[in-house]
Length: 245
Ligand code: 13P
Image (cartoon, rainbow, N blue to C red; front, side, top):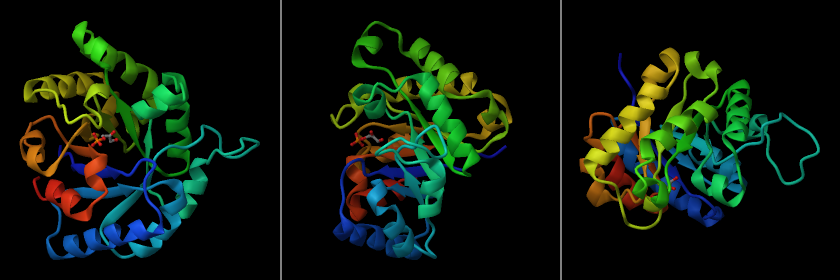
């Protein structure tokens, strides 16, 4: 049983058409030095179609950062999974802690979005992670197990998906858990995932991954790649992480 690692860049709410140059540079660099894993860029929805055009024929996959749980309807401002697929996405990040925190997304809503993504043919990257208070209260593994139970629908037992372990306190802070803490969290997540899909889903680590710490994090046996925020905005930094694998 082999798990194909995935390194995905989450641009969050950053980027305009000018930023597509970074995507082009990354594609050119990876054409010269191919990655030992799948590589994805997840730009804001406004750039999906243009990025799909610019990266046509390259090895870089394109992901969205969220989708609605329904296929269409009167939901002003929201974007449905089939629309993202139509714009060129093949992946979608779901349940990111910034969505859970700033938009109050619950596990049940994340699970509904996961189902919607699957129906549209998108591979979900489902995010889980504890807050600093939860870590300090020694609740990390319990929180992760409960988020997996609530956000990963049973239908994923036979599907292709990825999970990202992103401790909230490590996102954008320059702080990272110890290598042991990452290994423990990933083992707990693996044990909680359903079926064959869960056995082969790459479990990414996310939270302050940079070119200089990527090597040691990606070497942890249970880590199947990375979900990278800030350092994915510059092609040279993101390339340094990808080539650290
Ligand atoms: P940073 O890499 O900027 O810490 O962000 C991590 C993240 O939230 C990726 O989804």
